[in-house]
Image 1 (tube, rainbow, N blue to C red):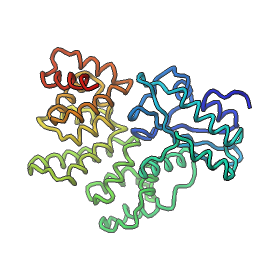
Image 2: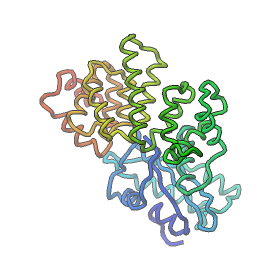
Image 3: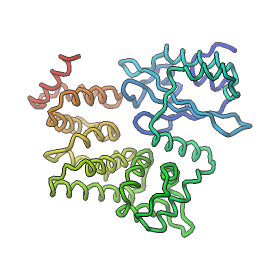
Image 4: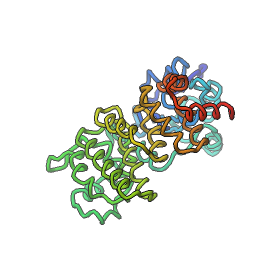
Length: 356
């Protein structure tokens, strides 16, 4: 085999078809062109997660459309560029184990080599379910057997009878929101009607699935209505209940792929103007809805809320996380130097660098 310099080259050389997904913060397709630029260190990884690029690669041969899956966690440098040594080490392990045939059935020795690959990792189950749904939907394959029970649950409207609902069915539904029922009702509209009635056992995994999808305006508004209702009730009751906070977090997460939509931006701007925001919502904003913090005004308001948590470790963690995201990095530096920043924020930033 000729010298292989990149994962893309490795896949091309084995005559594999492939698709690449970011699976760190959300599950989102990465174009082959962008992935090649990332591999060549022409651009930083756009969505780093704790100093790593978390990547899923689905690949298959033309004669066998059943895909294989690599789940990778590759380190990034301080600029967000891919660590070339780690990437090359991963390639070397794969080539040693499988040679040029990446889709061969590995023998015991090959399996041992593959299992000891330090760059393979297992994401949370809900992410695996969403990834599986996205890969199958992208390849126009049949959804899992769990989609039908979830559709039946939504159509029957017997909201307490959720025991037959599976997470895989929910994620299969989420990637198909534009499809229609036999009555010509879109899945999206079906969900809008059901949303106010769903028990937490269904609502929470549903929100985790929706965070990876572009939603209709009607569904965005329905989720915002439910979130605003939860926030108002909590404020009226001074409710600090963990379950209530968890619901708020998940509803905000559900809007992650739509946080640049006008309605979501308006909501977040209003939220940032409130006197108090829970630490949990701030964590969700930075971890899932970071694109809602791309202006100095929004990010400054966010940081000022963050210091009111009076948790320097939390501040340090979120600050380092945000500054690692390429689109936010210059905005973070701008806020650090802004003359209008509060004394408390200046102190927190000083403490951060003193501890570095």
